[in-house]
Every structure is written in structure tokens, then in C-alpha cells.
Image 1: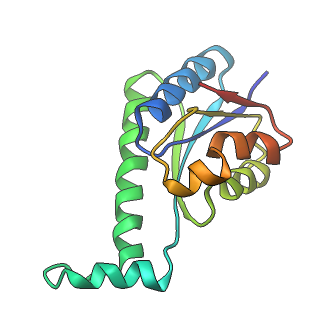
Image 2: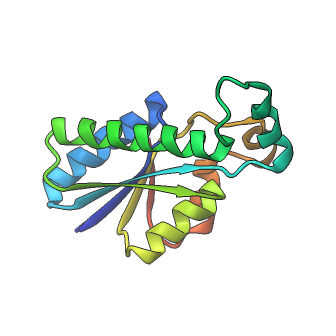
Length: 145
């Protein structure tokens, strides 16, 4: 049935609920679980706001990448503890919905399982939720938990 399940994880409770659902499905089907955490690139204006903290001069994108890696690794440990046989974690940068869809296509994912609400920004309220965008952009089945 399913050989490869993708779970986008943003650290929210709902994304971890989706991960639990995906691990359960993988246990029934023998599917591989891929966890994907995408952080959004910030504009120069947004990045310049991080410069007001002289005690932490790192670039904002570097901080976001590190945080995304932490989320992905935490999700991978969670999935393994829940009984997943094979789990891989990935971190990407870019447009979130389009990044999920592109990853699913490139990796030939059979199912995308994602939370209905995550840790979004004001952009999500104006443009629609990430799960709605993914479901409308992909040709793959999407389960929204």
C-alpha cells in the first residue's frame, strides 16, 4: 500500500500528532517515514533585525537552520521511540508548501501526513494554511491530522 510516507514537522503539537499517525501507518504497511522540516528564508530587513543583539551576532538564517535541525532530530527520536522501523529526517530552506510538494515528488512519496495547524506566521492567515496549500498543489494523497 504505502512504501514512503512524508511528515512535515514544524515542532507544533499537531505536527507531532501527524507523526504519530504516520508511524502507526508505517507499522501496518512497512513504509519508510521521512520527516521534513522547512525553515523560511528571511528578507534582508528581517535579518537586519537580528543585528540589534550584539551578544549573538549570527545570521538569522543560520539560527533558523539550527532550530530546524533540532526539530527534525527531536521528531526522528520521537518516531523511533514510537516504534518506527526506518526514519529519515531532512531540513530544507524555502517556501514551505512548495518545498513539501517538491520533496514529495523528488522522493516519490506515496502519502503526505501533516497537521492541520502548525506554528505559522501572519502570512498563513492571509494566504491560507500550509496544509491547504500542500493539498491543493500536490498530486499525492494528503492526510491532514
